[in-house]
Image (cartoon, rainbow, N blue to C red; front, side, top):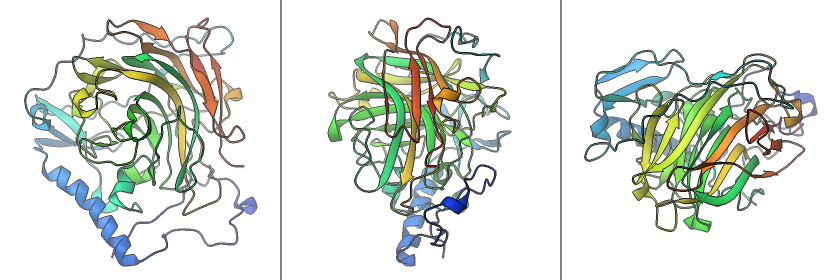
Length: 417
């Protein structure tokens, strides 16, 4: 009888010494407490959710990327009734990443973080990630699995970045701004952070936000390491949305990537869930160009030079993201499951280095801008930096616009000592 398990990351080279761990006197957690029969039913529900989604796909071909991502190629028209929407004007290739300028210390150019696909599917088809269902071992209910973290949170970082009283704690190092917002763009430096437990994650992302409480709505894009969702300890491109302030998830309501209905894929070389390259401390740096734009009733997402796809704005409410956003936010987030392992997480944010370590050591986000009107005017971010616990993660920002990086910041940290 299969049940969910919580695995500790086996990357011994990245683990902190257990000699000082406060939980030394308790056995390692490889299986959650509770009724095994209930746990088995919950795991089966999660697996069945994915199987049902995959059975509904009109798969024309299947391929595997060099990084090991399994891909189904489906007719683009099969994702939703009618023809897919037309994207904004053909994007120009993002400007070549340049040295950061005075005071930032870039010593070499950055590279695109997107991984090349192994091959293209048949004409008229688009790629969708297919997970290894038999290998899935998440703990909790289907709603837990679809939520952003083991336990859903009620608010996005600008509202209340502090730890909730129960459930999974979300830690942040981010910069946000309350503005009229029709889109945003910038570069996210990508790494392979050490994530301590399989039901915890580490990410760097943008939030496009409007609303409050259970009416809060978001569109989120970035790079994430999350074993329970992707089946490995590697960084992946992710998208996420909520229409209910993170209180529920499901088709047309909210969730990750193509785990729930909502996203319409149109690109053929980038797709939600794909692996991305990781930077090397003291060496090559990779960053991911992300752009979000509201265009003709759809929230489009661009990765690099390609419009990857869109969320129909009709998913959202009139007081939410139907016609605009009222906040833009960039930064890092980790989730710390305080229920099954109550000691503070040793999960890295970004590279695992504090912001003061700078170029080729700390993670960065750069050339951060938002669209301030529906005519397409782009304005540099003038964000408010904020962290939840400066002893674990921090941020160092420069929004003066005096360097080639425009508005930028370094961010991250190693978690609990």
